[in-house]
Length: 77
Image 1 (cartoon, rainbow, N blue to C red):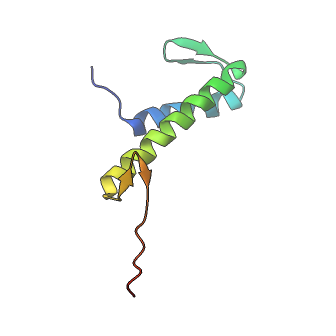
Image 2: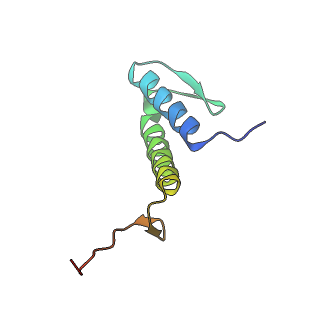
Image 3: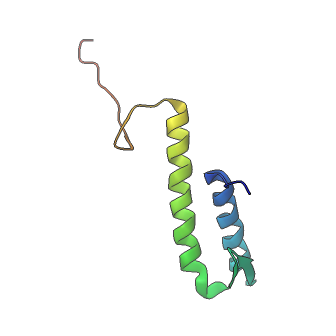
């Protein structure tokens, strides 16, 4: 079994959130979830959105310090 990527997990959370918002109950991560579980789905979605953003920053080669991006000002111009 392969480990899902952050983008794949984010897609699953987005799908689950959309289904629950439409009033459906769905099977998600081995348990049945409904509208009452919407907050936990949103919490998971936000976590995976942050992971996807971090992967994209790392892939772009943007400088970071402790996971936080930064810019360097040039004062010689």
